[in-house]
Amino acid sequence: NAGVTQTPKFRVLKTGQSMTLLCAQDMNHEYMYWYRQDPGMGLRLIHYSVGEGTTAKGEVPDGYNVSRLKKQNFLLGLESAAPSQTSVYFCAITDRGNQPQHFGDGTRLSIL
Amino acid sequence: QKEVEQDPGPLSVPEGAIVSLNCTYSNSAFQYFMWYRQYSRKGPELLMYTYSSGNKEDGRFTAQVDKSSKYISLFIRDSQPSDSATYLCAMSEGSGTYKYIFGTGTRLKVLA
Image (cartoon, rainbow over all chains, first blue to last red; front, side):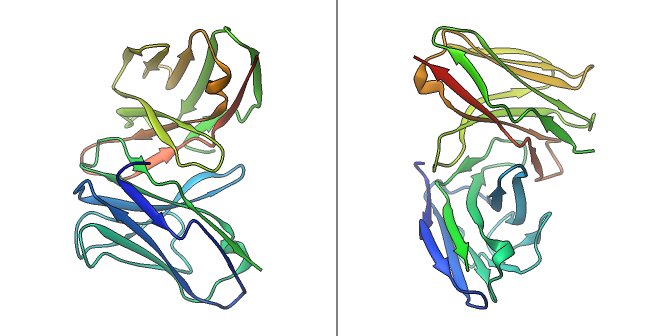
């Protein structure tokens, strides 16, 4: 999806390993979000940011950390990966709180 | 009870049929309503965005919001095999919050 780029697209980790997912946007939007999508559970908000240097917890933040050092980048970190974190992770952006979100194409993460 | 309920399907229809997709919700504070289409291994793509009650039409797609019944619908006319995807509804209270609540999605298959 134009405007939101997620890297990597796919990754396999072993339990206990760490990694960082990157979301980069070129639309100069203030708000950025990290979701996970699991079968039957829809999109669940992990963390979000309402501007450079700010972050906040969402619905399922445990086991994840985030940083937004630059406006265009939002990083999601897994310090010690667990099999329960196997999921598809989506980044979304929006210009204002009541505007629709635009999504990246996701990162498929499998933790063995 | 989930804030947003959406039948997961799958829903199979013949090409050319009118498709009706629905979501119900419990939070009367929701004011902004969105429909997303998600193809396999892709991110959600915004289809329709409406504010408050009423109808909105865009080509073959019509979004309907009935706030009194807490019910939203997406109609697809003259459905095509390329419409085969998962459709997600999403809602937001709007100003003062950055939270979006998503339905779990309805899988639609349009048969040629």
